[in-house]
Image (cartoon, rainbow, N blue to C red; front, side):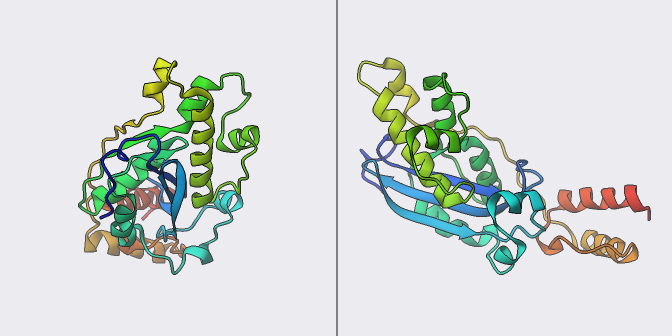
Length: 247
């Protein structure tokens, strides 16, 4: 696992900028389709981690419209549990940084917990910083902050958004993180990311067989990878089919 010198850890000059693309915004119901991370040392981007992820289900059309990521793009991509060791090695002991970082962290933590691994991190949220230090802006989405700071951005691709968040953070620091600003001494440093996640139980053989039987009986397309669904996910989908089509 990657290690850094002690003075680099928990420093505003050393962190991993992170961004995910997902099928939706609910960590319990949606899945990751892309992970992008940028390792920053001494304030400069040094390395990039970028992986497409197979979500085990169809990507909603609206997500494809936003990200450009299609079902064909992820069909042969690894499942998230297959890249967690590689991602953990890339992140090492570094803090995380991102735009609305807690949302991305909650998706990743769920993946780690389901794989049987702990994942606790400190983080810096550029959205919170922008809300506090740039209240005059009409909007503080990542794309709007990049336009304000004249930072190039190919929006809604994970590695590009991670790099953009890093660049926005450095611009904010340059303007507001001064020795005379006592609040900034805390605001621009990583704080614990608090997110409670319970491990999801894997679906059993009979549960999978019942779902597949219902899909066949009602001549419904199989839009999910049943082998990669949790017990709760299969239960929700089964209940939805029963409510709409009956037994």
